[in-house]
Length: 76
Image (tube, rainbow, N blue to C red; front, side):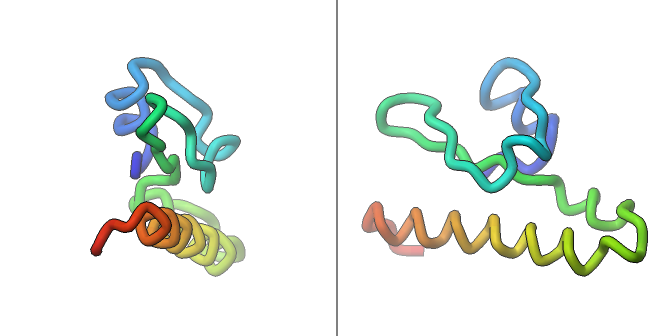
């Protein structure tokens, strides 16, 4: 899981738009997928009227990671 722009840049070696790629498992190698999502601190900076929606999206991203891990047979 790449949490935010710094993590994405570190993993992929270049920047990717976070909001356009969030919630997607992106192939890094034939056997490695990376989930891109926002950094948790982003949730502290969104306007109050969007906080519940953004938090729900973040939780959905993490649930996707758990589902993927289970599909791969990982014990987490």
